[in-house]
Amino acid sequence: MLVLGIETSCDETGVALYDSGAGLLGHTLFSQVAMHAEYGGVVPELASRDHVRRLLPLTRQLLERCGRVLSDIDAIAYTQGPGLAGALLVGAAVAASLGYALKVPVVGLHHLEGHLLSPLLVSPAPRFPFVALLVSGGHTQLMRVDAVGAYRLLGETVDDAAGEAFDKTAKLLGLSYPGGPALAQMAQSGNPGRYKLPRPMADSGDLNFSFSGLKTAVLTLVRGCDPDSQTRADIAASFQQAIVEVLVAKSVSALAREGLDQLVVAGGVGANKALREAMSKKAGREGFEVFYPPQDLCTDNGAMIAFAGALRLAAGAPAGNGFKVRARWDLEELTIASA
Ligand code: KG4
Ligand code: ZN
Image (cartoon, rainbow, N blue to C red):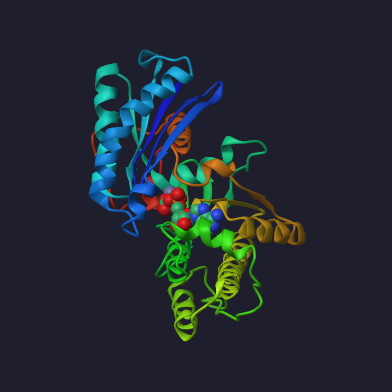
């Protein structure tokens, strides 16, 4: 079964072709980051308009590159939510129209389901059940994953998401949007031990997170001095270390509580090298396995949507030709009747 995946939930237009026999045939992405950077964040209306401009040309290019034509497509998967309503509507409209024209099923996907299943795209893949740490710009959650479509929330952030904290802190350090990768780069030349920043909710006894206080602590540091470049690098490294420590500690607690020994790390912040190193080191010491999506599939992309769409259809999820988006949507609502 050949599935076309469409991702337009935020500021990346992603399309992909996934074949249930041959695997991922290809994926392509247009990032709007440069366009939004001058505003310091994503401008929803501009995002929607750009998805309109990019989506069909990208789809044509991808089909050509993969040596396929529209009539080869057996199903279409698109991101139904959560995300920016206008941006989601572009993907939904293209998916519904193509589905109608080609007379193929259309399945609306949860963006986070795409992220959390993406490590299954590569080998070795995690086996169900596992714990997933989802760390993106909009979400920070620990999930128990028993099967495709069977997700239980174990804990989540009570304020900022990890990616949001990276982006806001990066802004305080004078880096442009989205600052996460730039802050990580800056942290490489910094001393993570120079500033003792808080480890928010590290001892809260539950699996929730809080990152807004960390950002405020950085604000206090930056306000108190006019940081030179070494100081800024030291702040970046100290901040990164604090956030990584909390993410690692809570993931380990989640595995212990659930009695599981496989962890999936997914979402944009999963691309962070310091997090990967610390998590892998901890896994080696504590005897659990950790799985990541390929580096280029950590941030938003169409491949995870095409892939999750194929898995959901194979698991018996209902498909239709519906035209629906959900700007807010809990992953736990996704239960597949047959799962
Ligand atoms: O999953 P994603 O592409 O989009 C959402 O669904 O939100 O995640 C984007 C987030 C941004 O906050 C970005 O700054 C962060 O992931 N990010 C990183 C890194 N790469 C992306 N944060 C820290 N280190 C990185 N290397
Ligand atoms: Zn995402």
